[in-house]
Length: 273
View 1 (cartoon, rainbow, N blue to C red):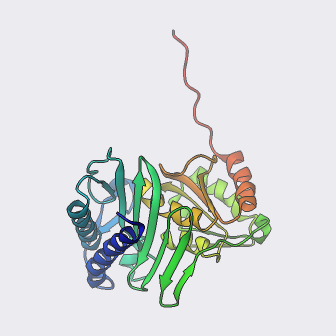
View 2: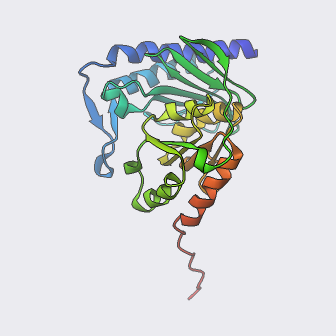
View 3: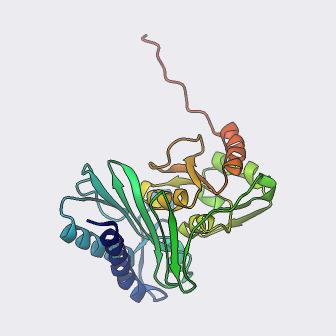
């Protein structure tokens, strides 16, 4: 499959997802809570229908590929090529009628993200990347994405979806960075990461992320010249505590504060008795 054919297929996935989701947006749709006692974690018929549609297209086109999605169980997750799907990242915004949500699509090869896309069908914007480059298409036309320079935290604009989603200790740690930046804003979900890739903001710091929340965004951010890691500077593919930055200097400065305050894991008990 050529690169051009591949790009066409990813666009088909995004189009199928968007066509499935939009009839539900800003309607009186029912909302289920899949969070249980862990808190409110909404899911709608739009989430499930969009993932079902994308899975069907992948299965029909690439039967040997695996699929891992937010709403349904993994399918051939050990395959060489695995698609990672989050049909609506930002479901809380979606059910509130706010457009700060998007469909996340990634392709991994042997566990490494090789392509990612964020598609927002209501606004008609698509952000994509392959780690070597990143691109935007929307009402304003087409352009390459590039992060902006940010020498220090005192110059940085920081985003997080909500500090209330963080555990108490992580929220206090986040506050150390928040106190050091020029401006801090809340909301955005996947859109914040794309705005970082587009050069409009400098840092995104979050916790409790799942792999499908972050894997599709990694090739976009790195393709635009940015960096994505965990709070302890590890690989981000497994999710958890995540920091994305447009400039390595801002990333290093934020990491210094985050790593100083990460609660230590209990030491293993090696006493044979």
